Image (cartoon, rainbow, N blue to C red; front, top):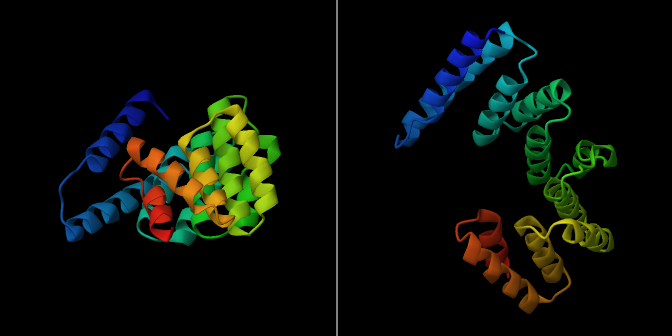
Amino acid sequence: MTINKIFLINLFLITILSTANVNSAGQNNIDSEKIIYLKNQVKDDPDNAQARYLLAKIYQKNNNIKGAENEFKKALNLEPGSSKIRFDYAELLLENWKYQELYKVLDQSFAIEEKEKESKRLALITFAYLGEGKISQAKKTISQAKYLKNTDKVQLALAKIAAFEGDYKKAAVIIEQLLKKSEDNFDILLLKARL
């Protein structure tokens, strides 16, 4: 792909993706246009991992989970070293309770040297363990993640573990600390509502 073609694609995507303040019907039209555009990009260049990734994100946003999964898989096969694609795909799997698939996507062979990303990988695995009710594995995994880098995802996992174990006071303290940093984080607000 030539540099001019890449530039034009990026310019077009930036223009489409930066459209703001549209009503719901307008947003649906924009998403439809994005989908058509990206499908054409994939048709013209089936090895375009970035187009497949963006298509997956739009499908996910519009609750086309099957389409999102398919495009994430293809994008990841094209760029297996992309932690961005891998993490977003894993989060989709987590949201849809597909824990076994998540474990495969975040397999140990994908362990990352960068502490923050490896911590995120372990935190996502912890959330899957919690989803399956495997508290002891969750605690072991999150302790490894916390040792590497104590991120907000790690703290959220620790709050969920505390809630699972009935220590609602500890969970509430962690949640309040997280909300000071990110008061509109849906996952944190959801856990707070559940307490």
